[in-house]
Image (tube, rainbow, N blue to C red):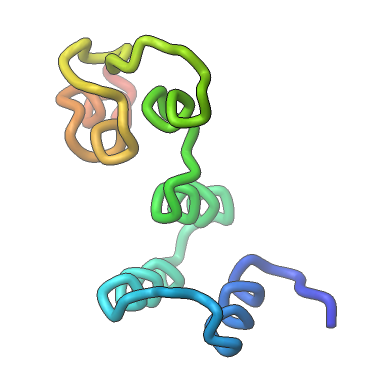
Length: 98
């Protein structure tokens, strides 16, 4: 069987019941897959939800020595949640104001 999309691979994994996904995580994935967004947005969501975005914090866990402070706000550690939700400057970047 050849898988053509990430969605098909994800469904196959869940049918095989090899993941340890909670009910809450399943609800988030169901909502995410129903969104009408370009494929690159799906990939960004997948990377964020699985902890695979290359933030400074994530790179540091892979033994890449970096200053972990957010380069935009210089106020907190650059984690996935900070980068996409909590950074006070993320709203301006999304709207092209920086």
